[in-house]
Every structure is written in structure tokens, then in C-alpha cells.
Amino acid sequence: MNNQLMEETYDPKKCLKSIFFARSGGFSSKRVCGVFGFFVSLGLVIAAFIFDKEVPEFADMIIITSSSLIGVDAFRGIFSKNISN
Image (cartoon, rainbow, N blue to C red; front, side, top):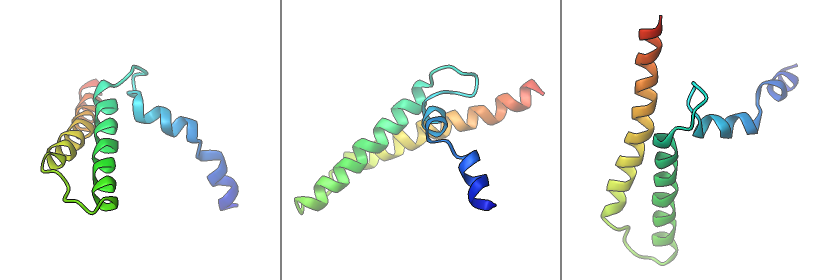
């Protein structure tokens, strides 16, 4: 029963769409930039590991900025729910 419920509720297309689109249905540039920054920083860390180099210092800034962009969008969504109620 749990397996059947899991298959009905999890849709990979909806999951990917929710990453890039806001709840209102519009395209969220903050989320796109946040996800892009996450993948760039992940690539830097992996490349540094493969080539046995130190991770560049600006990778910290990319990680913080991309996390902030994703967080700002989530934070804004919390307050927009409260305002509309």
C-alpha cells in the first residue's frame, strides 16, 4: 500500500517544475540563480577533489549567495501566505 501511495504522490516532472517555478505559476529567477550557483559550487568542489587542488575561496561566496537566493524566495513565500489570509 505504501509503495502504491508513493508512486501516486511523487512525480519527477512536478518536482523539477517546482524547483524553477513559483507557486503563482511564474518563472522564479531567484530559484534558477540559486540552483545554478549550487551546481557551479558543486562542480568546483568536485574538480578540486579530482585534481587534488584547494577549493577556491570564492566558492564560499557562491555557495552563500545561491543558498541566500533560494532562501529569500522561500522566506518571501512564507510572508505572502500570511498577507493573503
